[in-house]
Amino acid sequence: MSKPTYYITTPIYYSSGSFHLGHCYTTVICDAIARFKRMDGYDVFYLTGTDEHGQKVQQKAEAAGVTPKQYVDKLYDQIVRLWKVLGIDYDKFIRTTDDYHEKTVQKIYEKLLASDDIYKSVYEGWYCTPCESFWTESQLADGKCPDCGREVKLQKEESYFFRLSKYQDRLIKFYEENPDFISPKSRMNEMINNFIKPGLKDLCISRTTFDWGVKLPFDPKHVAYVWIDALTNYITALGYMQEDHSLFDKFWPADLHMVGKEIVRFHTIIWPALLMALDLPLPKKVYGHGWLLFGNDKMSKSKGNVVDPFVLSERYGADVIRYYLLREIPFGSDGSYNNEALLIRTNADLVNDLGNLVSRTAAMITQYFGATIPRPSGYTELDRELISLCEHTLDKVRADMDNLSAPDALADIFAIIQRANKYIDETTPWTLNKNGDKDRLATVMYVLAECIRFAATLLTPFIPATSARIFEKIGLPQPDDFGGLTRFGMIGEGVTVNKGDNLFNRIDVDKELKELDKLKEQSAPVEERQPEIPEITIEDFARIKLTTAKVLSCEKVAKSDKLLVFKLQVGDEVRQVVSGIAQYYSTEYMLGKTVVLVSNLKPAKIRGVESNGMILCAADGKSVVFVTPEKDIGSGKEVR
Ligand code: MSP
Image (cartoon, rainbow, N blue to C red; front, side, top):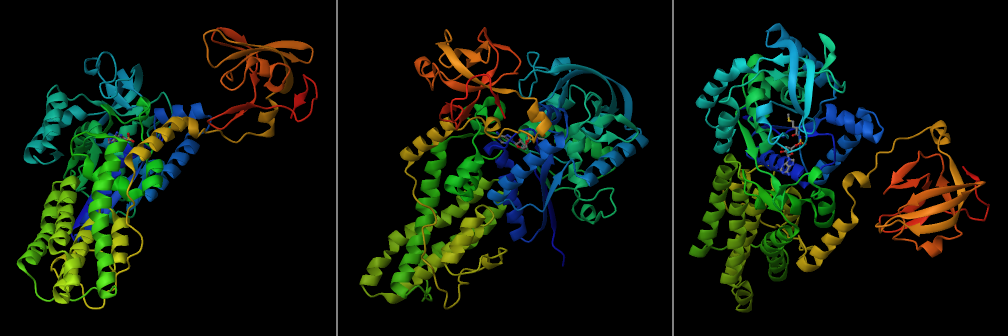
């Protein structure tokens, strides 16, 4: 019999900046759900990807002096590396710049035009470029974008419109007939009250003011609105309207679109209406999870409060991050991130509860039974309590995962771990050993090994690498499914444990918090850390005039800690130049020094002081040193 299918998606991530811990939240949750479903007997397709078109990308690429494609390629590399580090096991990664996707988006527009679901008119209204969202005057909050609070721009341009208004009644009917379509329930009310009831307006779905997007085949000066381009990824990735559409036939409609709460409206209004227009079945569920906050703010680059997942996973390992995100943030609501909570949660659950159970058990089996898991000899009431707990946990965890609640699932799994630790204290194996009660000792060890097997199997979808290490320690292969959880007592004869290193090392919270603070101070904003400087030709370089210059005088700029103003001898000429090196050099020290000047730099005023050039310096984030010729060569000499 063929397995039931399960199609789960994350949103495709904007390729217009770097990725922070908040971004990892959606993907880690989906990964845990996908892995759980796979182990629970489903044929799973887990899709993720990148949203690579749009005005924002074009602007960022221009600012970085690279082509949009070069810009998104770099971010693609970064996100693929991030998902690898975090152990994300997706089935497909779609990029909206993939050729098959672009071609299918064009076919979709043609189909919508043919069915008279789109028409040409003039768009007049407000646009938020960071959110790539259109707003009417009345939807603005204090004249700003109601989603992100940033500036919006008045737009007037010829555009194609999607007849969204036509689908209003069908959408309401669909919600009524499918009360679980939008979860949690509160988000359904939000959509109905804030968007549907005031009346749906037709949606502008093309742009002409930039060209980084999918060109409309019937009017190529228009590019597809980035949200239509993006939403359709969920079907183009499966081969919709393509030669090989077997995945589409097998997996569509999606079982779950997991999205952050700010993009629920795109997924529950625009997306279903678009699918209705295409005459396709609608997804079964859209879940709008809460945000990872930093203090009271959403973690986001514009607020400068991002936590770098690369840094955290390098310090603690991916599973610590996965565990924290899955366990600590109440699902559906917002959750506040802080370093201390991460470290305390790690010490309490992973080091104390899980780590201790595994290392104590492996150490005792090694000490008392030469590392071979002994056979049990008759269970007591106490043993039966643990056996029953183990045998019932899969059902509980399955119910938790049906509610998409990873925190509850993990709490239920940790109930086995905590109960087993208590069982060690209750049975005191060291006393049994001292008293020579080998039979009881053997049963206790067997019960513990089985509890670990149950817990590690159930933990696999959540912290897969740790689970693999636990199986290595208890000398069993890591299972691919939950088949081994049907019965307690499946560990056979002759299984040998390998004590090895601790699963997790205890973290000194105070010390580590200081280290993390230091790291934060040192790290410049991500964009500054990774400047996107493109390759240049020798001709480009020839346009930069570098000249030696001798310091004639040097003074501090009034009311500035950073700036010095120099009079420099440059050949026959005397130049005034401002440089931000006051924290690194005294005015006396600089007198008479030879520096290298970018001498054809356009004059600028810095703090009201005219500056005609720039002094070259080397910097490593902590200190700054000026560049000087190796021997005295005089001023005004060309540097090549
Ligand atoms: N490109 C759109 C999605 C198009 S889907 C057809 C987009 N991209 S995003 O990069 O901004 O967001 C990707 C996912 O990360 C979203 O689910 C978003 O909610 C999530 N998060 C981004 N910051 C977040 C937090 N601080 N906390 C939790 N998740 C957040 O939206």
